[in-house]
Amino acid sequence: MQMIKIEDVQDKVLQLRNENVIIDSDVAVLYGVETKRINEAVKNNPEKFPEGYVFKLSP
Image (tube, rainbow, N blue to C red; front, top):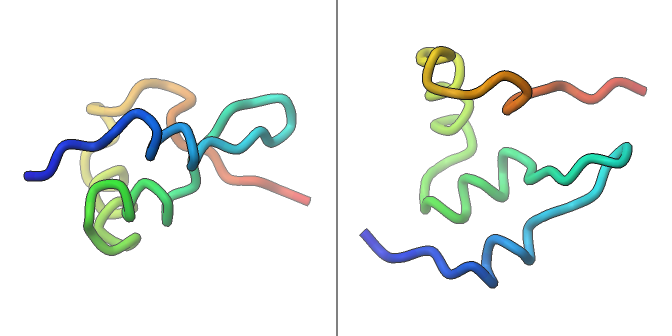
């Protein structure tokens, strides 16, 4: 597995509604997987992710 550089992560951080976030497609790029794999991991293993790790944006 290739190491993820801190600069690569920092480039993906966005600020939305005063929160620092990384969208699922960018997390997938960082890990070298498809976006759906990230979403499946979160859906199938919610106990492994801290509260507030995932949220959906509304208009």
